[in-house]
Length: 78
Image (tube, rainbow, N blue to C red; front, side, top):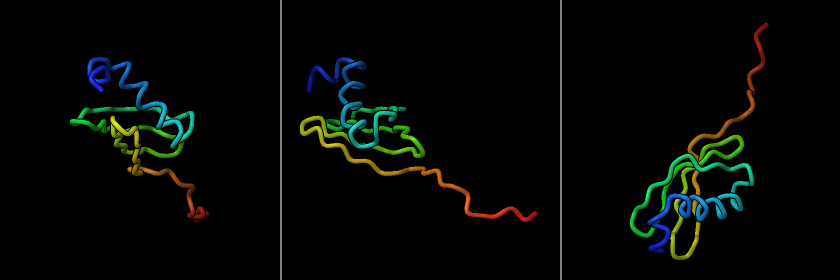
Protein backbone atom coordinates (compact mmCIF):
# COMPACT_ATOMS: atom_id res chain seq x y z
CA UNK A 1 0.00 0.00 0.00
CA UNK A 2 2.92 2.41 0.56
CA UNK A 3 3.58 2.44 -3.19
CA UNK A 4 0.00 3.50 -3.84
CA UNK A 5 0.43 6.56 -1.63
CA UNK A 6 3.46 7.80 -3.57
CA UNK A 7 2.10 7.86 -7.11
CA UNK A 8 -1.01 9.46 -8.54
CA UNK A 9 -0.78 7.21 -11.61
CA UNK A 10 -0.68 4.11 -9.42
CA UNK A 11 -3.66 5.41 -7.45
CA UNK A 12 -5.61 6.00 -10.66
CA UNK A 13 -4.82 2.54 -12.05
CA UNK A 14 -5.67 0.89 -8.70
CA UNK A 15 -9.12 2.50 -8.65
CA UNK A 16 -9.86 2.17 -12.37
CA UNK A 17 -9.87 -1.66 -12.36
CA UNK A 18 -12.56 -2.19 -9.72
CA UNK A 19 -14.45 0.87 -10.98
CA UNK A 20 -14.60 -0.55 -14.52
CA UNK A 21 -15.84 -3.88 -13.17
CA UNK A 22 -18.60 -2.19 -11.16
CA UNK A 23 -19.70 0.57 -13.56
CA UNK A 24 -18.48 -0.52 -17.00
CA UNK A 25 -15.52 0.28 -19.19
CA UNK A 26 -16.67 3.86 -19.84
CA UNK A 27 -16.42 4.84 -16.14
CA UNK A 28 -14.08 7.77 -15.47
CA UNK A 29 -12.66 8.80 -12.11
CA UNK A 30 -13.26 12.51 -11.43
CA UNK A 31 -11.69 12.90 -7.97
CA UNK A 32 -9.78 10.74 -5.50
CA UNK A 33 -8.71 11.43 -1.93
CA UNK A 34 -6.73 9.26 0.45
CA UNK A 35 -8.27 8.75 3.88
CA UNK A 36 -6.03 6.37 5.79
CA UNK A 37 -6.47 2.96 4.18
CA UNK A 38 -9.34 4.10 1.95
CA UNK A 39 -9.50 5.92 -1.34
CA UNK A 40 -12.65 8.02 -1.66
CA UNK A 41 -13.85 9.98 -4.64
CA UNK A 42 -16.32 10.66 -7.41
CA UNK A 43 -16.62 8.95 -10.76
CA UNK A 44 -18.68 9.53 -13.89
CA UNK A 45 -20.38 6.47 -15.29
CA UNK A 46 -22.72 6.58 -18.31
CA UNK A 47 -25.91 8.23 -17.06
CA UNK A 48 -24.81 8.77 -13.47
CA UNK A 49 -22.28 10.19 -11.06
CA UNK A 50 -21.20 7.89 -8.23
CA UNK A 51 -19.34 8.31 -4.97
CA UNK A 52 -16.90 5.46 -4.34
CA UNK A 53 -14.86 4.10 -1.44
CA UNK A 54 -12.07 1.64 -2.17
CA UNK A 55 -10.46 -0.28 0.68
CA UNK A 56 -6.79 -0.35 -0.32
CA UNK A 57 -6.05 -3.63 1.48
CA UNK A 58 -8.98 -5.77 0.33
CA UNK A 59 -9.61 -3.95 -3.00
CA UNK A 60 -13.33 -3.85 -2.09
CA UNK A 61 -15.15 -1.06 -3.90
CA UNK A 62 -18.43 0.41 -2.66
CA UNK A 63 -20.42 2.86 -4.78
CA UNK A 64 -23.41 5.10 -4.13
CA UNK A 65 -25.28 7.03 -6.83
CA UNK A 66 -25.04 10.77 -6.29
CA UNK A 67 -26.80 11.77 -9.50
CA UNK A 68 -28.71 9.63 -11.97
CA UNK A 69 -30.01 10.84 -15.31
CA UNK A 70 -33.44 9.57 -16.30
CA UNK A 71 -35.65 9.98 -19.31
CA UNK A 72 -38.37 12.62 -19.13
CA UNK A 73 -41.76 11.24 -18.17
CA UNK A 74 -43.73 14.44 -18.81
CA UNK A 75 -45.56 14.88 -22.06
CA UNK A 76 -45.36 18.27 -23.80
CA UNK A 77 -48.42 20.47 -23.23
CA UNK A 78 -48.80 21.41 -26.85
